[in-house]
Length: 343
Ligand code: ADP
Ligand code: MG
Image (tube, rainbow, N blue to C red):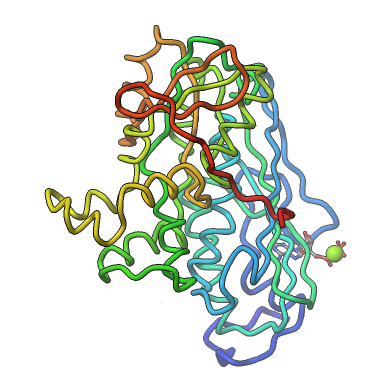
C-alpha cells in the first residue's frame, strides 16, 4: 500500500511504530548502500580512513525541560553527537536514532524530525537506522564519522608548553539554565541569546577538521571547561594554568552590554561570568591545545570557518589546574564541572 501523504495525518493522531518510522525517519540513502528498512544498514568505508563512532543520549528532565520545543530538541540531539565528531576532527557520515516516546504524535514527531534532519542535511550526515519504542522520552543517537587513518584529534596529545584554546564563546548555555531554574533574571534579549545557546548548540565540525595536524589534543565542552580540559590533562599526563581574565571574556552575554560595564556587573557580574565559563556545560565548543609554533595556524583554522579561537592558558608539567588572575597571581580554584552522579 502506498504511504499516506503527510497532510493526511491530523497533528494529534497516534501513529503506529512502522508508520512513524516510514513517515518521519525514512529517506532515500545517499552514501549508505542500505538505509532504514532492513535489519542492518550498510555503509562502505573508504580506503585510508578510520571510522569515528560516538553515542550521546538525551533524557527528558535530565538533559532538557519537558516542554522544550521539539524542533530545537531534534537539532540538539544530533548537534551534541556531531560535537563529538568535531572534537576528533572527523567528517560526519551517518547516524542511527534510538527513540523512546511516551506517545507517537505527529504534532511532536514532525517538528522533531525536521529539526533533526535539517541539521543532518547541513552536515551531509544521513540517518541510516535506529530503534523506536514506547517509553519515557529518551533520544539516543550514534554517529559515524570518517577520519584519515592516524589523523584523529585525541585527548592524549597535549604537551608541556602547549597553548590552550577555546573556540567561540562559552558559558552562555549555563547562564540560560540559571535563568530557567529561577536563580537569576536577565533582560529579555540577553536571555534569548543565551537560551539559543542552550537549546540549539552549534557543533564545531568545520573547526575540528581544520585543526587536524594543528592541534595536539582536543575535546568538546559538554560538561564544563574545567571538566573537559581535565580529561585532556588526565589522558595526556600533564597539568595546566588558566588565565581567568581571558576566560571570563568568553561569555557572549558580556558583549551584549557593550561599554555598559556597570549594567553587566549589576545583572551578571564578573564572578558569575567566570563561573559560567569554567563550570557551565552544554555549550559544545572545543577546548584544544597546540604548540606555540602553531599560533598562526590556529588563527588560520579559526578564520577559515569564522570561529574565534581564544588562547586562555598553557599546559604545564605539574598535574592539576591553576587559575591565574591578570597579575599572574594564583587564585583559589573552587569550580567544579557537571557530573550526572555527583551528589
Ligand atoms: P529490528 O526489530 O530488526 O531491530 P525494527 O523493526 O526495530 O528493526 O526497525 C525497522 C527498521 O527501521 C530498521 O531498519 C531500523 O533501523 C529502522 N528504524 C527503527 N526506528 C528508527 C528510527 N527512530 N529512526 C530511523 N530508523 C529507525
Ligand atoms: Mg528494533
